Image: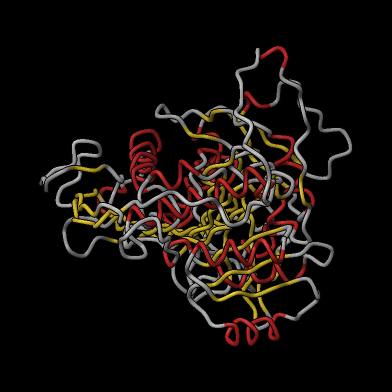
Amino acid sequence: MAKTKSVFICQNCGATSAKWIGKCPSCNEWNTYTEEVVSKGKKEEDSWREESGPAVRPKPINIREVENSSEERLVTYDKELNRVLGGGIVAGSLVLIGGEPGIGKSTLMLQLALAARKKKVLYVSGEESQQQIKMRAERIGIQTDQCFVLSETNTQNIFAQIKNVKPDLLIVDSIQTLHTERIESAAGSVSQVRECTGELMKFAKETQTPVFLIGHITKEGSIAGPKVLEHMVDTVLQFEGDRHLSYRILRTVKNRFGSTSELGIYEMQTEGLRQVSNPSEILISQKADDLTGIAIGATIEGNRPLLIEIQSLVSSATYGTPQRSSTGFDAKRLNMLLAVLEKRGGLRFGAQDVFLNVAGGIRIDEPALDLAVCASLVSAYHDISISDKVAFAAEVGLGGEIRAVNRIESRIAEAEKLGFTEIYISKFNTKGLDLKGRNVTVKPFAKLKEVFEDLMG
């Protein structure tokens, strides 16, 4: 009979202790230790393994003798997912996708399973019955005969079915609902999440089968479970957006096989998630009249150039202390730009309420939006509209100087493609810039004051 013991485990980082302590020495969080019963019996053989002889132990190899092998990638129908993953799904990779409830994580993964016509997919759900999954699949549209659905939470039973089905792709919804018989604690606890993820990672690496895990998030917005969960997987994707709005954003938080700055955009419709191939068109609102406080900024997310609409509202402070509110833009950077405009531009923002919004529900932290933010604020301050055919791409320094940004050619090309006639950039970006054949006028400046003199007279 297995020996039973209880330990105290930190719910934030997964550290263990023989007794309860108030502050975790590993992550310095308070009151995160909870008692869990841990019982490890005799270790069983993995049920998904084929019967074979004794396992061969790996031996160290000189790094010069290691053979290079190209990563085999499964290119899916979903171009946005391919971009975010770095070109497709890598064989044997473990991918964790997190997001708020109702955002569309299960819909995205079910669409992936239903569209993989030439691959056998096993969709394991611990939250929904097979009938519920069938209802959603009929709404999305069943396009394959190779998608198998299993409602199960016990990992031993799941691996037994994996041995029968032999899938080319495994999807688990969600990792917090699984439990293994090797650990005697509740499903969703730190020890269960860590052990179940370890079993799935072992399966993925030894069979070269890609595995997708759907993860819950906490009220702070981080993925539930120990932080070691994000260290164990190869890729972490964040699915975000307002569930009351139609657009969703898929971001890369961690990727061992590609860039971590890629972005995928979807639109939630009745029949599922639609890929948005040209996000600049949806991020720039269609307006009939010239409005003040609106400027268009050219930014880069990964390899994709985007044109973002910046909206500002400046009004007299009613309650003494001026308000500073920003949505989709860093509030500290907004305060810095307001200070630059007041000191270098002579604008009295100290007695004004300032509200800033990035249209489309997207969040951008790139400094190249600085000039667009300043133009939007000045437009709202003076109540003078900026032409909707003008774009901005430059960083603003504390001295009021216009600083250069990277990949300016891509930003100019995107503005030209969407019909913009002028784009304001830094004077220091013009070195080596080839503008032959361009239908957009590039206006380089070195000072913030010069930009507004040219823009508004």
